[in-house]
Each structure stands twice: as C-alpha cells, then as structure tokens.
Image (cartoon, rainbow, N blue to C red; front, side, top):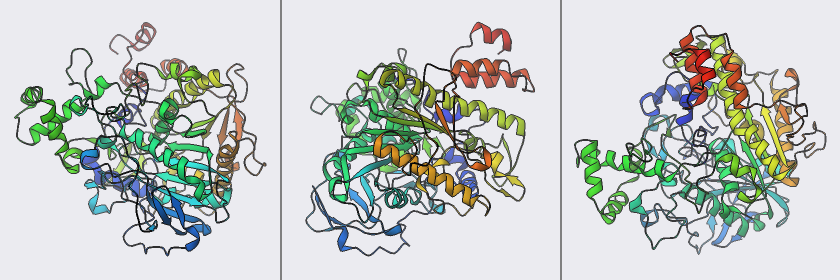
Length: 632
C-alpha cells in the first residue's frame, strides 16, 4: 500500500485531520457550503459555477478551418476566445455504460457524419454542486451521466500539424466531483498566448471510477478490467487518444505534459507510477497533490475483517448498505450474512442492476466528495505493496520524467473557512474569525503537513532518483480584498486551488464574487503572466528556467545536498516580496518537533489534539508522551 495516510487529495478523508475541529458532511450541510463557496468566489478544487456550455449558452457557429480527422471520424469546432481553435466534447472512449460499467475503457465507436464539437460533453456522474455546473436547486442531487468520456481541445489558429507542445489537464475534485469542461479550465489563454495545444478531459468519478468487489472479477476478464482503477484507465485512454490524434490539431505527440491540481495532482503521480502510462507523456506538473493508493483489502473487505479491516465504505460495506436500503436485510449483520450467501453471479447481477443514483446515494461525503477508497494498488495498473518513498527513490519503479511540484502556502484555509468551529457565521456565511491566532496557527501546521508530504518528501526522493529535473514551488498570493469588514486575505490567504486562476489566466468564470480590487488587478495579472510563462516553458523544454519570455526570475531545480541552497521558488506579487528562490524545506520530523515545543495553545487538551492530528493515526512516542502528558 502506498502511503495510505496521505490521502487528502484523492479522497475527502484527510480533510478531517487538517486541524479542522468539526466535520462538515456535504449531504447534510450542502446549502451552507454552497453559500460559502458562492461568497468566497472560488470552488473547491477550482472549477466553475458558470460552465462554458450551459443550456442557456448559444451553440457556437462551426468554422470550416477547424475540420479535423480523428481515428473515429471527422470533427469540426469553432473559433473560441482570443480566436483560439476550439473543439469541445470529443468522445475518446466508448460509453462505459451497461455491461461496460466497471470495465476498462474501449476505443470510441466510429461515427459516419461530421461531429460538431461545439459543446462540452456530459459531466461524469456525481452529486450536483458548483463543480458540476449544476443549478442551485439541483445541488446535492445526482448530476451527470455514466456516459461521460469526452475531451476538449484549444489550439492557436496558426498551429501547424504536430508542431506544438501539448498540455493535458486532469481536473481535481477528490476523484468524485468536477469535470474538464469548466469555464475556469478554458485553455484559450495558454494556447494562444503561449503557443501550446491544451487538452482537458473527463474521467469516471467516485464508485464508477474506482470500485472493486470480488464478484466483479472474473478469470475471463483482462487485468485492467479486474483492477478497479477505471478512472485511472480513463486517463490513460485519453492519453492514448492524444498520442494517436493530437497531430491533426497541431500537437506534438512526443511532447506531452500532464498536469493537474489536488486529486488531479494525485492522478498525475499515478501516471508516473503506472507502467501502462509509460511513453504517453513526457513531463509532469503536480499542483497541491500527493500520492495515495489504497490496498484491495481496504477497498473490499468488511470493516471488521480480522486480517485487514476494510474502509467504512469498502465495496462489501456498500453492498451491505444497499441490501438494507432495499429492505432485503434489517441490519448490517443480516446484510453481511446474506451477502456471504449470495453467489458471485448473483452479486454481480445485483450490482449491475443498480441505477446511477442508487449507487451514488449509498455514499456519504464532504463538499460533494465521497468518503470511499480510490486508486488501488492492483499490481497491474498500479504497483502494490510499496511506499511512496520506495517508489520515487528508485528510477526503475516509475516513469522518469521532469517534474514540477508544489503547494499553496495556506492550503487548508479553504476547508477551515467552512468550519463553524473556526468562523462566526450568519446563515452559514462567515463574517469573522473566532480566534485569529488559533486559526493561523492551525493553518500553518495543516498546510505545512501537506507541503512536507506532498512536495518536499517527493522532491527529495525524485531528485535522488533522477537528478536535477525536479522543480518545486510554493504559491503565496494572499491579496484578496475585504468585504464589509471581513478580511478574505487572512481568512483565505493562499488557499487550496487559488493558483489555478493564475495558471490559466482566468479570473472571470467564477461565482459572482470579485476577490480583486482595482489596485491589486495589475499585480495579479503580472503574477499570472509569469506563472503561465513558467508552466508553458516547462512544457516546451522540461525546465521552467526564466519562462517562455526569458525574463522571469530563474527557477532552478530542487537540491538535496546543501541545506542552504535554493531549492524552491516562491510565487507572489511585488507587493509582497515578489517571485524569488528560497532554500526552505519542511519535514514531518521538523513539524513534530516544532509543534511539541509550541506554547501558544490555551489548554493542554488543545495541544494534545493538535499533535494527534499531525500524526494522522500514528502512535505517540515516548518523547511526545512526556511532553504532552500521560493523558494525551
């Protein structure tokens, strides 16, 4: 099992350990969360509440210059923003419905007539919210479809066949919400402003993307079909489509950069870990990610299994819940007995007979994300029985490519701001911090835990394995304006997902709240221009260097040996120290030592609780026990 404690971006589980005292269950508090997200002007894992192809949006006029031939048939697109050539909703695989549910993706069926690629495809099945583009009245309801494997392309009008680097975007959302066609992921700025071909994709989410049960595995199926990693395989299939077809759209299939944020960053790292993705991409960018791979035991076993207890929403426990919901069992013990007595064929038929809504409504989650295992070490799609340190310390264990990796300075403030234990609220809308000192202290430890595990540890291991081709960053922008006396700069700061707008240069696709005042906009735009320059230069050459324009602060690789050497770039405006290299690095050992000696806690109980949250289930050692007391 790969680093199961490090699952904050792949599932919602980790959010509960990030120094946030109270869980917020999305299905119970969805209206509150929706209000907060609408007010703060960003969505969890950054997507758009105003999708680029809502029913009210007129269908764009097709443009004859966009006609292209793919291996499934001809497509025609339109002229999008900044005169970009744009194609939306191209199928890259056969619909994974009916008997193809919980099967590896197959090539898309050929079509005879010209396909008008002018609207985004259906979003993958999920609970409706800002990330799915659902209307407010549909929040919390099942949204989207299992027929959802579509991709979108943006290209400069001057792109010659096979000439430009490809940037392949994997959206975030806990691997259970979001979609690639969100307006905030419009690739026109990157394509036309920096000369790349931009591709975004959908992939199966939640229990349709990652689900494994013994009854679903058969000897006649392929290892991919039996892996449970259907969302992972969807991403690989989309990369395969790009390899076969992107030449026609101006892309160089031998220069593909995969990049993603949060769960999308997790998925980028799984591409590095999967032997099936070898050769399909050539560079990788990980924004606020990390690596988390569940074992089959956690994914499948009953929660009271004596050898390896399963997750509370393992597949066996999900079937138990279904049997109870159907009235076929009165309680868990009866459901467990019935499930054990059902044959594999009956269980398989039972699961395939469930509707999309039946399956999703079996789960619980937070912020729309489902609380369930995702991404499995099956031994074929992804390795099993190996730690992330082992994986990335040995170049023979993964797909070696240049890597950019980073986090935001205040990652966890987005989640903390949604906790009523942290904020004073009216109708669920925050208006002030309850305890500014505690809020910022808890953010410091939670966000640096993310950085230690999601960036610095991985960067050290990758550098030891592949040398000076690893580039780390920290995003520090925190210049939000105050609204009615509420300082969003302190409450949000450089929160989770905020860098996405800067990477895409998109600041107007959001939620009706403007975080920027007139004085901050020029500085915002300058930082965004620099970040797009770094990101696209990396796509061209595997080294962000001085950016595409050659005028940026030089971004040098991570270094392991010299503790005083520059190893990470800080991304900020000139109003607050600007873009600069730093020697900073963080380790879990350092954070534990710092927290043990922290005297800012008001009570021993608060200190103890904070340390236990930092440990994420680890036992206290003797040093910590002596410091915190025997009652901890």
